[in-house]
Image 1 (cartoon, rainbow, N blue to C red):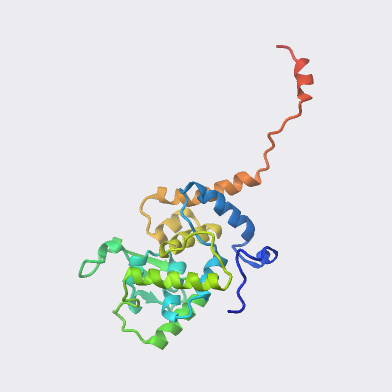
Image 2: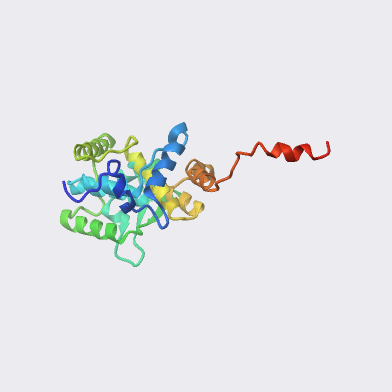
Length: 243
């Protein structure tokens, strides 16, 4: 496969990988390694890694599923309930209606507090979704991905294998839920307010965001350049001071 930048294998090209305004891929990878070393911070992919992984999904149905997870941060169970009717792609502010997994087994109209609206801010993704729906012509109220969670996981495993065979390796285990963590981190890198991200991701408890924001606490601490090493000659000055 061509036109793909190996993510871990070409340090001299790392500067070509965009993260966010003012972001640096190598620094972001180092921060991720540090933040996830304790097992508390969820494993996540950075934008160039997601882009590369989607490249290795030649089947449009697979590609659009994981592109949707990446663009919305929804859970895999929520994605399974999406229908063409869930998407509003025609207006000036495209968005998708996401049903909470809690209503998965219920019938009838879901409660208002079990539906959240997620803006689709990437124009390229909106065009891809429109094109895919025109091509496949799915029924408006039928699921776009009527498959099991396990099938979706297998699609992802196949893409990871294709990437590795082509020399693109990921330093973390990749699962469908990784896309949710990646969405949240991507929004934080783009300086979106925590409360906004919390609402879009469907987190009821504000404390759920703390596991992500600690990455930026590490970043801030690393850039402070606080010195701790002293000079032994300070003892000469201290000897002149009264007890």
